[in-house]
Every structure is written in C-alpha cells, then in structure tokens.
Image 1 (cartoon, helix red, strand yellow):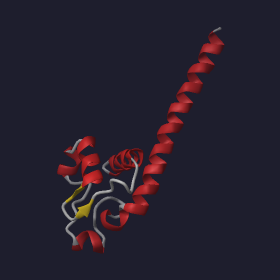
Image 2 (tube, one colour; image 1 turned 120 degrees about the vertical axis):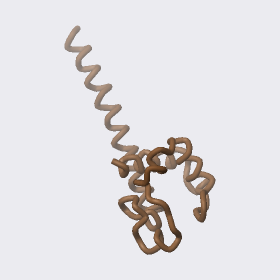
Image 3 (cartoon, rainbow, N blue to C red; image 1 turned 90 degrees about the horizontal axis):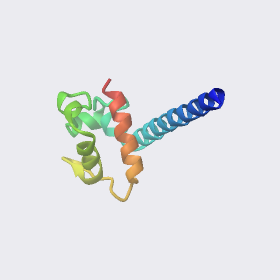
Image 4 (cartoon, rainbow, N blue to C red; image 1 turned 45 degrees about the horizontal axis):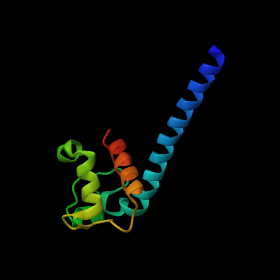
Amino acid sequence: MKIRTGLTLVAILAASTGTTAFAQGAGADTYKAKCAMCHAADGTASGPAGKAMKVPSFKSPEAIKATNAELIAATTNGKGTMKGFAGKLTEAQIKDVVAYIRTLQK
C-alpha cells in the first residue's frame, strides 16, 4: 500500500513538473516568435527596434513590480507603441509568455 501511494505521488509530481516545463517552453517559443524582435532575446530591449521605439526592459524595477495581470493586460490590449495581441495569441499563450518573461527577470 505504501509503495502504491509513493508511486502515485511521484507520478503526480512528474506530471505537474512536466506541465510547467511545457508551459515555459511554449512561452519561450512564442516570445521568440512574437516579442524578441522588440524586447530582445534577454528581455532588455537592447536591439535596434527596442532602442528606436524606446521599449522598456523587462528587467527594469517597474516591469519586475508589475503583476502578472498587468503584464497580461498589456500584452492583450497593447501598451505604448505596442499593439495588443488579442485575437493573435490565445489567453494560454499570453499567460505562457508572461511566465517566460518572469524567468528573464531572474
């Protein structure tokens, strides 16, 4: 009985870890395809497009303090010179991108 319970817990843990890794992978893929051209691969907006449009870095104190809901809203509806991605990305894709952005801030 203890072995079965232990195996069940291991399976649940593995499944939840795999889902998180998939979400970050999907978020990274979407970020690279849709965001990196302006925000740069590392989120610093240090490329030519980011500098030209004065895109803020995701590593700035303001971006770090922003809630996930605020980042989701900015991505969905647009902010500043960035047009929103509503209708272009699903809610799940936007959430995955925000989760990936958080990894860039570390």
